[in-house]
Image (cartoon, rainbow, N blue to C red):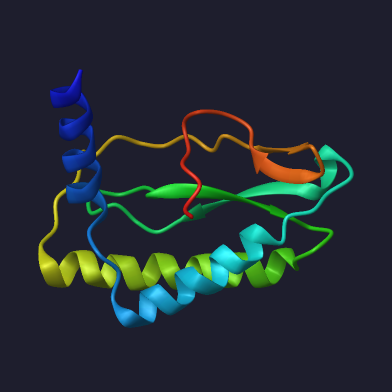
Length: 124
């Protein structure tokens, strides 16, 4: 079992790379919005794609609350982070597993917006 876990950790690390200082600050701002995800209904919860894999598609998804954060602000930050990650991928020549993450959607659970499925990863 341990070799499988180590392999998954290696594949994940190899696919995501490390964010530059600019991308890191954008990601920190996105994380802050994700932590402010209080909700009272599923309609207040949305999922946003984060980052960019070297061969296309998002690296992860994050749930956020429209009751706490402006969807326009979240989308603008997510778009900026996607562009930053694309530039990093090109500059570093990174490769990834090329798997595509489907949007898992988001739901209100215990007063917090959370991703609705197992296909996306919440960036913490």
